Length: 62
Image (tube, rainbow, N blue to C red; front, side, top):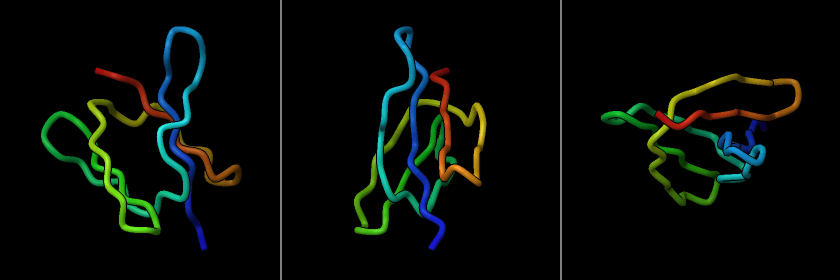
C-alpha cells in the first residue's frame, strides 16, 4: 500500500489534514482528497511538494 499523509502549510508550521490518502484529484481551484476509508475532503490548495519515501504530501493554500 502507498497511502500518504497530507499536510497543509500554515504560518506556524505544517498541519495534518488527512491520513491514509490514496487519491488526490484536482477540482476547481483546489484538490479533493480521498482516504482508504472512502472519506473525502476538499482543500482550497495546491501541491507544494511530495515526499513519496516518507509518505507525505505537502499542500500550500492559494
